[in-house]
Image 1: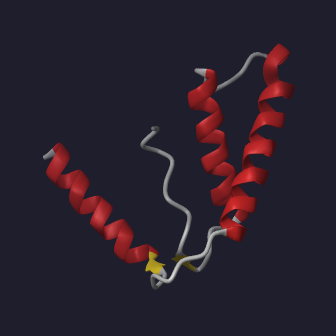
Image 2: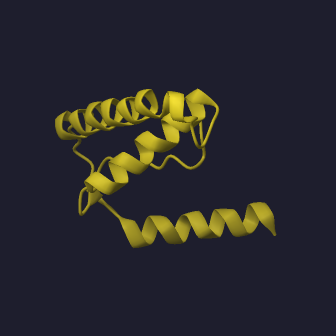
Length: 88
């Protein structure tokens, strides 16, 4: 899985539409194998991003959990610590 796609479920505040779209864009880039599609493929690429973003938002809206919501700042600090250990 692409490391740039982040978990979006169970955060306070909930994921924004921009975060959902960014995750969808990363997914479509990974699957298609290109970061910038040709003009001939741009429409299909954009449509795929919109479809994946819609499906992702639908999923997030319908998931439920009994776990308390995660704090974005705490999770970001954990990620930085892991990265420092990994790349030090």
